[in-house]
Amino acid sequence: MKRKGANNTYFGNITEAFDTLISGLKTTWKHIPLARKKRSAKNVDSDKYFEKQEGLFTVQYPRFEMPVPEKGRYQLHNEIEDCIVCDKCAKVCPVDCIDIEPVKATEEIGKTSDGTPKRIHAAKFDIDMAKCCFCGLCTTVCPTECLTMSQDYDYSTFDITDHNFPFSKMTEKEISDARADLEKAMEEKAAKARKKAENRATSESSEKSSEAAKPKAAKPKFKPRPMKKKIDSDTDDNKKDDN
Ligand code: SF4
Ligand code: SF4
Image 1 (tube, rainbow, N blue to C red):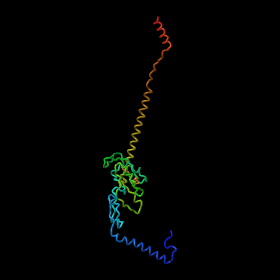
Image 2 (cartoon, rainbow, N blue to C red):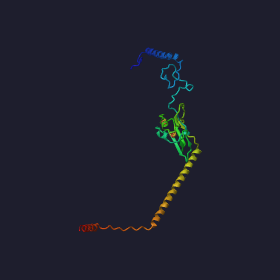
Image 3 (tube, rainbow, N blue to C red):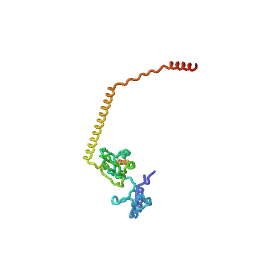
Image 4 (cartoon, rainbow, N blue to C red):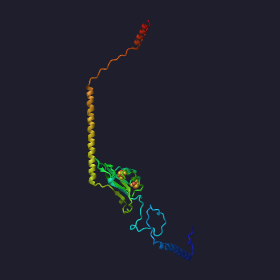
């Protein structure tokens, strides 16, 4: 399409410039009286959410904030006291942004608020929100409902690594103690299993040697009588009976 004024005369271009300026200013002037009105903040649940509003469409953030939907997917939050470190959320995550390091406890370490026993320590529970695609799958599989999408969304940072949120509350010492306890328990279990296997082997060998020492029972000699003779004798008997 040929641009208006292109390849036109010098004065033609000047006229076009004025036309464009006036057209732009008309739009600006039209909005000046409307700018006195502000768009009212309406919750998505409101029936009037899609009602056409006039005036300024931007808000003076962060002094003013637009309401967010109650069930919106924003920042993930893990109530770590209720987490049983089952790893389901990490397994279902399509982008692998949940990083869990479980350390098995040697005994029950507490209960969640819904009464589920906790048997695994969360040495690490990190969620990298920079990778998260907000699909919400992790929250649906969580058996204790400790992983939720909160309504917090203002997490602007200068460094992308700041979007990695750690939820584990264990100190380095607690983690190393838990690991040491687990290692000790595993060693004890392995020693018990070894001893059990040794005892079984000893009893089996003693059973075998006692069996070998026993005299073998003599096999009964059994010779079946030849059938022919029996048949002959039966025939003789029959003959006798006939006589
Ligand atoms: S919302 Fe989706 S992408 Fe984000 S952590 Fe959960 S499963 Fe992963
Ligand atoms: S699914 Fe829930 S309970 Fe299991 S590890 Fe994830 S946050 Fe914890």
